[in-house]
Length: 324
Ligand code: DP6
Image 1 (tube, rainbow, N blue to C red):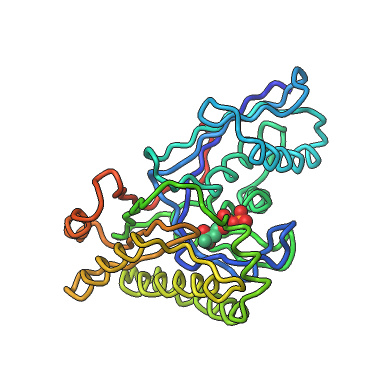
Image 2 (cartoon, helix red, strand yellow):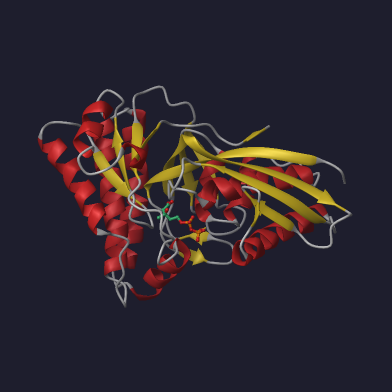
């Protein structure tokens, strides 16, 4: 097996959040989710299976991966090896293209790129749906990064029917995100642990699942209408409802930090002044502002007293997985 394959996948930000697994081994979520793939933040991954190796060799930006990440990625490669009946170890070189200290480096682009490069390097021919299912086994959010634009991850109930579908692959209307990078310290509670704790202990979890699931058709309709205000309002609701489940977990926890509230306050104030902008956040303190490119300069100006230009990253919708 000599083929060395490189794939690129972009990260995505969920507008309707995924939070909670019905099956943690297969990564089957409780609720469907819907995201926008971003243009600026992506991962390039090269995989090469070789008879010369006695173990997987996993590099990140030219450095060996830490033990935990290397183990998770090897287990993911096992899925590909089993499927391809390929008893060989792999050399994996991952390059994360995210601006310095973005704190956005994501398992979404990482596992989507690894699935695409790994499968092809192992001689498998997988279509996008198969790739989405495979990427899901690495990280839930990676399921969606196979496609560009707006993407729905249909929750399903098993390994076969839980995958992403494109909702609007080519986004021909004005919507973008400003990522406000508040800090790049490692998360205190990973999304994996956070969602497991929430599922196990939050009395609000069943309400979360019900509301999130009901929001999917509403969000799709808002996208079809190209209605930035409706998309933003729903996305904000989804994010805050997700974060409410962490506050109601036992013991409670939160991803909010003081700077998170500062950023949210700026967005709320702008909105009172008639600017169409909304916020969302994931399993970390960073805030992403959903807005139009027309209003971006005004929003950046309002954020400038609190955050440096390096902390403010503007992204548009981006493409699905590709081979280099
Ligand atoms: C808050 O995909 O990182 O970003 O499946 O355990 O790897 P695992 O979790 P991950 O969780 C993402 C959670 C989220 C919401 C979202 O992206 O939908």
